[in-house]
Amino acid sequence: SSSSSSPSSKTQTAVMKASALHVAASAGALDCVRLLVLNGARDCRGDFDEDSLEGATAEELAAALGYAEIAAILQKHNE
Image 1 (tube, helix red, strand yellow):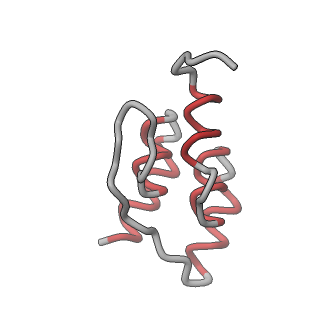
Image 2 (image 1 turned 60 degrees about the horizontal axis):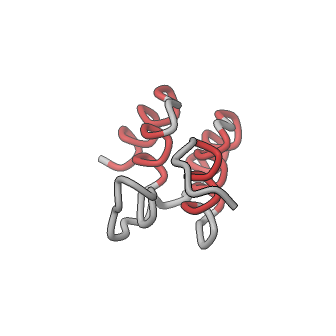
């Protein structure tokens, strides 16, 4: 296995012990994120490591992977 920091390897690392919201956000699944948020899903905060994305909230994960619309939805939801 390569130690590159491509989005797919970062995603795999970050979602290993993630919530459904993390998985949906990391996959860019906008409709799933909206559905989860509407049904009360909460974004968890961990010890965020920017290099591996480990401990990232779903919002941080979406932003790091370039899913700006999802990150914006989660930012508003987390306020």
